[in-house]
Image: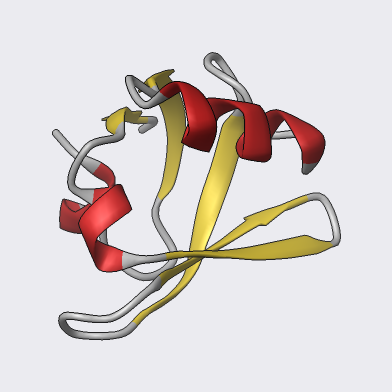
Length: 73
């Protein structure tokens, strides 16, 4: 599934960030392929707010549609 399809409170693993620019920016925030993150907030047709440890990051809806994730049960 893609990041834009996750639900609020769901924890997931980042599988792929195909855009090199987005990947570089995510790495600066400590989020890379293989990272485990939680969806803190999901704004319809807006950003997805991710949380890793105590850090929150907003990912725009367009970019969220390109990032592949896997839900963790």
